Amino acid sequence: MSLRAYLTLMAFGTIVAAATFFLVIYRVDPAAAGALGFTLLYLSLFFTVCGLVSILAFLVRIAVHRDEMLSRLVGLSFRQAVLFSALIVGALALHAHALLSWWNSLLMVAAVTVIEFIFISLERKPNVSQ
Image 1 (cartoon, rainbow, N blue to C red):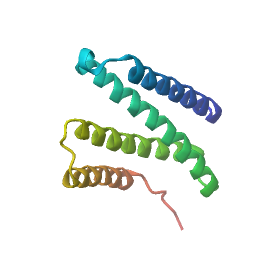
Image 2: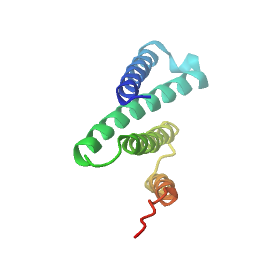
Image 3: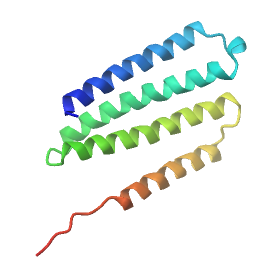
Image 4: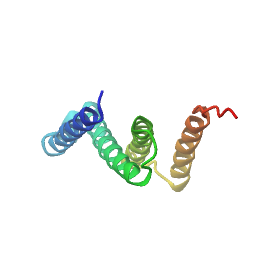
């Protein structure tokens, strides 16, 4: 997939997710919808935030790291966007159930940090021969 196709598909998916998010907010009654309504709300929010952060992080990375491979920047931006979106949606879900506290937030940030460090440690370093 070309970079242009990826960015177009990601932008289109983000717009659809944002439209779904606003549709759920304005059209779904939380009391009547039950768990399905909240699931749709959190999923659409996750995909919206993930798409926005992924695109913005990729554009910032292109501006800062001009010598890196674009495929590596896309993968890194997408992975961190997924982790950040999971952190945001998880915090909002805990807050909705009155379970969010400073130590829950700290544990979630620590878990995301550990996951990111695992991904960083698993990346292959190029073998430089002399």
